[in-house]
Each structure stands twice: as structure tokens, then as C-alpha cells.
Image (cartoon, rainbow, N blue to C red):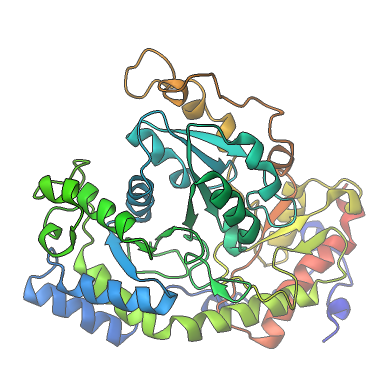
Length: 428
């Protein structure tokens, strides 16, 4: 359909009719919870097995097989899974983790708990993921690992990053919280680095209520993560002598076990996940295909034919180019789209490298900011240090997260965006 026929008339924010006259909540309903989910959770509750690990073991094995890893390990949340992955990779006092600044804090902040610190790299303008070309010059003898984040579902350019890691003997941790099931050049993200970790909270494309999971082919990373935050599973899994010697208590003093009601839901969700996310991709790609020639807007997705895709397309966003709309600020654009009955927001995390927690706060009473407490230099990164990262404010829009393709109704949502873009001059 040519949605241009929908964009005539006055903007709704200026008194005209809405393009999306009727809301369509069923297009956005998530998570999908069926009788099968409920029965699985109730079985755990009725058995009093919430704090056991029999269901979690099944879920770990099934998830690892689905994603293509040798090992899976469930956690109480995604933050714990990322912390477990960091410890699994050997990060400790004084070590440095290279990471993007535009990400949710859990991708980076747990490194402080290990006595490590963060060094932020810039991002690519098209993917909004860590820029492989801005990593190598940041590596020092203290660098232990690179954290990559498949941001808003976009697969990181992994090949050059893995080459850098191999040259410098570094570990690569993939934060897959936005991209479960996403594919990079034919391979599922989370299986390309040395370890993948992710959130599975209820809002994610893979939802279990609240939880996390770590996947890896590396037995040492797997065992270290168990030894760090678990205490009941040591006998079955720990083979490393130094880890076995400390068996019985978690090395980090953490209890990372997942409530098995979440594991039970996860097993059911996994059965239908590929089918459901295929529908999501169909809806999201339809939306962006309709807007392909719209001024001021560009899709945030891998090029067609690249062999990569967006998984469940969590937190979908688009590029906003105000210079093509006479300089119209993104907040005014979003306000006008929302007035048309659609959804539009900013949709991007604030840069971590400018936050006081990474510059000023002494979390553990070391007498200096935690960021530099165990470093041999002041590695704080002020305004202007990450130019692409810092210019993204005002250049990203959040868009509707369609859970399936529904022709005409998705066309109406796309028309709302196009209508505002084509009438942008009236909003200046």
C-alpha cells in the first residue's frame, strides 16, 4: 500500500484528524502467557520446588542447545548473569573492561564489584553498537575483556572484535539482553564471543518474569561462574582443583540461583520463541519498509542480504535526522507522532561515561572515585571524549514494537510517522 494517501490534511497536534484512530493493544501485547506457561509454573509451586534446580537444569540444557553453546547457567536476573560472566573471564582488582557507553548500566557497572573498572569505546553511527575501530588503541596491560552489547537488537560487528581479542589474548563477553535469537552472519549472537549473558525479565523479547542466563563453550568460565555465585551445584560441576578446594560456599558471597517458576516459564517460552520472533521481525520490517523513503527517518536494522537479523527486536528504535526536517527537535517530532495516535519516544540510554557514578562516586570508601580506585592512571572520560556516542541525543527515536504483521494497522502507524515528517515545517 502507498501510505502517502494517509498523510494529507492537518497534523493532529494542530487540530487535524488522527491517522491511528483506534488503538490496537493486541499488536503490542507481551509477553504471551498461555495455559501451558501457567501449568508449568503451577507445577513448581505445588511441588514446593521454587528454590530447587531440577527445572533450571532442564531449562539450561534446552536453552544452550537452542542457542548453540555447550553450557548454560541460569541466574536470578540479567545483571547477575553479566557479573558471573565477568568473573568467569577472570576480571579482578585493577582489571579493565572495554565497553560501549550507550547501554543499560548492567552491561558495565557490575565490574566495580570485582575491583575492576570500565574503559568506554565509541559506537558506530549506523548500528549504535561498539565500534571495532575504537577498541584496540584503548587496550593496556590491564585490559582483561571486551564487553559488546547487541544494542536494541542490532548485532555487533563481531568478526573484527574477535580478531582483536585473539591478538591481545582478551575475552569477549556478549550482552545479549536486547537480542536473544538475533543472528550475525548466520550465527546466533551470544555464541561468537567467549561467553554470552542476558536478561530475561518480563519486558524482554525472551521473557521468564525475572531472570538471566549465561551461555559459553568454555568450561573454565562456566565453572568459575558457578563457584562465584552458587553453592549447591559444586559437586556435580567443579573440576578445577582451586575451585573444588573452596566448594560449599560461593566465592563472591552472592546467591545467583533462579527461582524455578521462571525456569518453568522459560522452558515453555523457548518452545515458541522462534515462531513468535519471526512474526515480530515480519511486523517490524514491514513498518520500516513503508518508511524507507521518508525524510528524517532511517531504519535501525542490518542491511538486507547481510545474513544478520534483529532477533526479537527488543526496544526498537530508528535514526532521526533533524537536518532533513528543517532542524525539528526530536521531542517535538515525537509529540506530534503521539498526537496522531501512534507511539514515539527517545528510546536510547544516556551515556554512562558522563554519569557521576563513573566519575565522582566513591562507592566502597577507598578515598577516591571507584572508577580509578585500583587503576594506575585517571581513565575518566570527560565530555567530548566519545564524539559519536555523545551526539546521539536528539538523533534516535523509539518506535512501536509490533508483535506480528497486521497489514493495514501497521500501515496506519507508519503513516503517522510519515505524516509528521512530511509536515515538519508546520511544527518549526
